[in-house]
Image 1 (tube, rainbow, N blue to C red):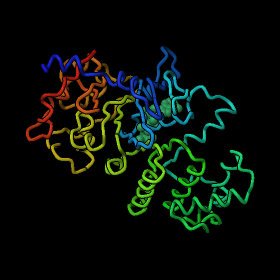
Image 2 (image 1 turned 90 degrees about the horizontal axis):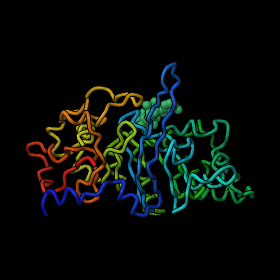
Image 3 (image 1 turned 180 degrees about the vertical axis):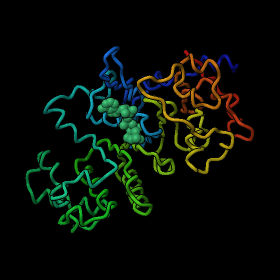
Image 4 (image 1 turned 135 degrees about the vertical axis):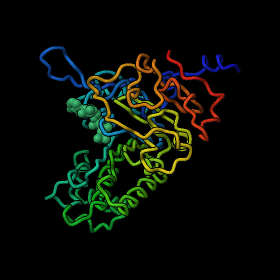
Length: 357
Ligand SMILES: Nc1ncnc2c1ncn2[C@@H]1O[C@H](COP(=O)(O)OP(=O)(O)OP(=O)(O)O)[C@@H](O)[C@H]1O
Ligand SMILES: [Mg+2]
């Protein structure tokens, strides 16, 4: 196959997501916040045209610097904010079509876990009551049945059922995070979104919660989106990883493929800056400078002002997400020219170029 042949054959990520069926299908979703301004209307592009799919039972990691739009993306899926444009399907059904009471009932399908378990629980309420409250809301009216399910769930998340009688202040952060995970699971969600679930915990608690997620993945086969700054943690737990930058998806691949062959210079820099032992990144630039404002994002490639490998046309032409290899997509026009001496990327020489459409 000639290089030109490969270039033409390289599918865009948007085409792939259109053709594959996933459990969660996000199509071209955006969230732009209007900024008050005296002169011309301006928008914060928190999430900008993201398409991705999560398969049933898959754990998808979402990484990127602070302000890259990860939490906004999670809020769009949980319907805490409504999108400016785009579509979301869950199990083949239009998720954005649910309104009013119908939406309230369906919210149990997508549960979210936040960074700080203390703020997710009422400090005056016993943990058993807090855990049972969503069950009552969703029609389990028998208090004895609710408590039976709460006790069984406490057991499942590795806590003694007696924790049902404790108040939040009588527990550690790790124990409370287990309670919060258990409360979400009681509703038997189809999708669990975890936004920095371990960042408020110390190292040993972190390991315990990670093991709990791994256990859930194996036993329950639940689909999850795991948002984190901790690359080590997402590598440990996720099947695939999506990298966000300035509201856009800039790379997506199977976890080990991403860590062994990061294609986008941003992903390389993120890994190089994270003190991870990833081989072949010796030549990758460290992340320098600030994330540009999502109000006035740079023209062309949004990463070009910080990219040590940027070329003159990177400031003019916006790259598309293009196939690098085996289900691995990156939004860089020159990813295949970035190989550094001794880098693992030499094996990519026969792969298609990422060209702008
Ligand atoms: N309600 C809002 N109004 C205006 N701008 C917002 C709003 N919510 C988020 N933003 C902006 O959208 C961008 C993305 O924010 P978001 O919280 O999604 O980032 P993040 O990747 O989750 O960051 P972190 O890692 O720090 O949690 C930021 O620039 C933020 O200021
Ligand atoms: Mg966030």
